[in-house]
Length: 177
Length: 81
Image (cartoon, rainbow over all chains, first blue to last red; front, top):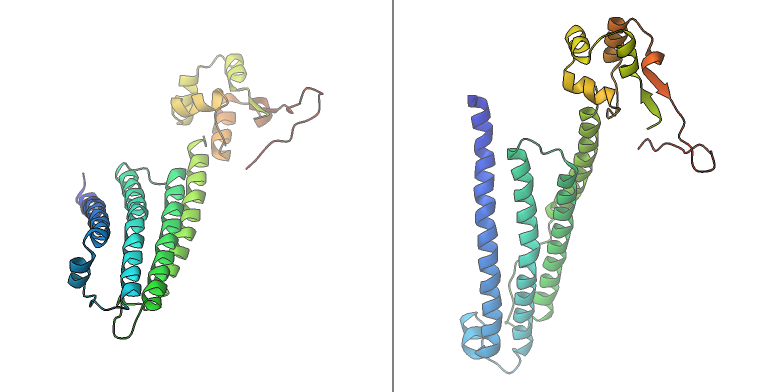
């Protein structure tokens, strides 16, 4: 292997390692959030105090909001898993030296739809957090709207089409004598 | 595809093997086999030119259009997508 190829393989190897780690971390976090959700049902008082919810007669809405956010957190785990595994599959095709295949266009499209799902979940979390705020009891999740994820989604959809066209052109070229 | 490749027939008339043609025009035997068996999706003008020069023939002797027809002998439109 030439030195330039070795250099270009380094980010690829790093991407594979990072994605492998992210897949594991995401699953662990999903299990942790699920565990936290269950513990709020089993031992509501101590867990909510630990999370900063001050016991008062009207904190029921805050507890409801926190549980709702935990449910969304659990639901986000399979969506993130979908993104990481599809991305890893794309990286594997790059490693194999054959990334311009139709299935990678499908994978990119799946990733774009999954990011849309995540963004909608983010919106739901913001609505939930703002909706359950009672007096000084506030569920703080950082509700700043950002255009970047939506631009990323657009970019990924465009890239998916580019991959699709590229794969077709490559297929045509492969059959050209 | 209704384009039939007659390379085998022309080679037979010229008493030339596919390997010999491959050596003469510098196109791999594998690619010529793809062309000969009608599995090619496209042919470059440069390839056609080289084959015609080596076999001293016209493109029409190598490629023939045969319209695809259905059970009622009506032409079936070819999908080019």
